[in-house]
Amino acid sequence: MSTLADYRHPPRIRRLLASIAPIACPPEIEPLGLVTPVVDHTELTLRSFPEVVRSALLAGLTSYELTSAMWPGHRGRPASRLDRERATRYYRAWRRSPLRLQRELVKGVKGILCLAYYEMPQVKEQLGYAPEDWIRTATRHRLERHGEAIARHRAALFEREPLLPLASTDNPERGRSGDRK
Image (tube, rainbow, N blue to C red; front, side, top):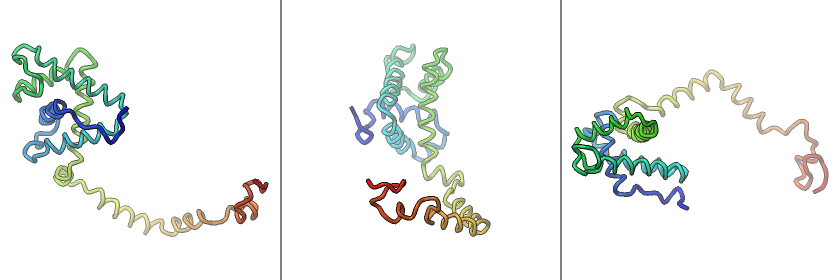
């Protein structure tokens, strides 16, 4: 059984995800040079999945990769070896497939790739997404508005529990009910 830390994309899956990323993600992925970092991030994402889910996803990706070779016009090439035009048509065919399993696989893969894309610092910067700034502003505002109530609540958390007998809080050898252990 594998652990979270030992998963690595097999080379074929890495090539496949690198070929799907420019189709599934926003067009800026290539000009920003993010295809490889996005594929690396998907490896981390899959590493966090339970083994059964990861195995199912890898089986689906392998199916996507290999069934491409049977499509007319693909000349026996797997999906990762298709030119962009054929790869895009193949991806869209799976996305519109009458088979729900194919549609859901492509939807899931797109979700994982786009999640990775939007986690990239360049993309966050381009979007003006700066959660740290918002957190600092919200914290300052909350403390200005509710500082006294927060301080009272914090102090109450560390006060002695009024309903417990002194013996149980002062003497670690006694249990909550005051009985000896």
